Structures are given as structure tokens and as C-alpha cells.
Amino acid sequence: METTDAEEYAIAALLDGCRTPAPPPNTAASNAAAATSAAGEQKKRVEMVRDRLVFDAACGGPGSWTTKLKQQETDFTEQRGDGWAASVSVVLSLLKVDTQTGAQELMHDEVGSGRAERASDAAAAEEEALKAAVACGRKRLGKRFAVALGGEILGAIETAAWKEAT
Image 1 (tube, rainbow, N blue to C red):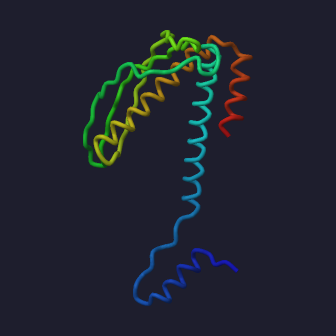
Image 2 (image 1 turned 30 degrees about the vertical axis):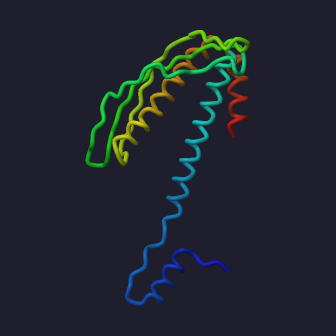
């Protein structure tokens, strides 16, 4: 027979005598936070797969494209009461790659921006903001090329993205 958190709390209080034990964990809130985090991670995986498949379709297949961070600018980094904050802007390039020669041709440049708050230090804030800015630029590139593919291809890409990412 298993005991509940409340029973464990009462047992610990009896055994410890004078010392007040830690309150039982709020497992419902922890489970809800974990589920929300897992759903957010799944959404990110689906978006990355979707963008990769869009770039494959727009550039001629797997291995026929790459992205390159062309420009990066830190807009601000500052310490606040709850930690460090930063904002970063980037220019991300989509390059079509000739699979035989390796030559790269610029397809399009797109901007992205990212913010980070409550980081432990300035470098962590800038790193988190940079990741967000690159993801923003990648999404914008994906949207730009997805529009030209048409509904039927986009439907197939969406189905394939969910199958691969989940």
C-alpha cells in the first residue's frame, strides 16, 4: 500500500518531533508545468522539422541548402532586479548549395530578433537572446518560402513534420 504526500508529511512530523518538516510538494502544479514544457518543446521540434522540409522543397532536396549567420548585433545587455536581460538582432541567410561542387548561392536574407530575461549573468542572457533571434530568423525564412510552395505541398510537409517530430 502506498502512502499519500499528506500521510508522508504527517509521519515525518511525528518522527521529527519538534522540527517542522518541509510541506508536501505540489505535484499537480509540477505535473502541469512539466506538461506545458513538454508541449512547448514538441512545438519547437515540429517547427524546426517543418522549416527544414520547406527549405528542402524550395532548394531542391535534403543537403541542398544551409543557413548562415550573416550579422549579429547586441541591442542591449543590462542587469535588472531579477537577473540579466539582453536583446539581440541578427541577419540570417539561406544559401542554396550545389551538391556536386559545394558552391553556395544566396537565396534570401532575413532578420530575426530575440530577447532574454532573468538570466544568471550577461553572457547567458546574450546567448539565450541569440538563440531566440536565430530561431526567429529561421521561422521568417521558412514562412517566406512556404508561401510559394502551395497548399497541397504545405499540407504534406505539415503531416510529415508532425510524424517526424513526435
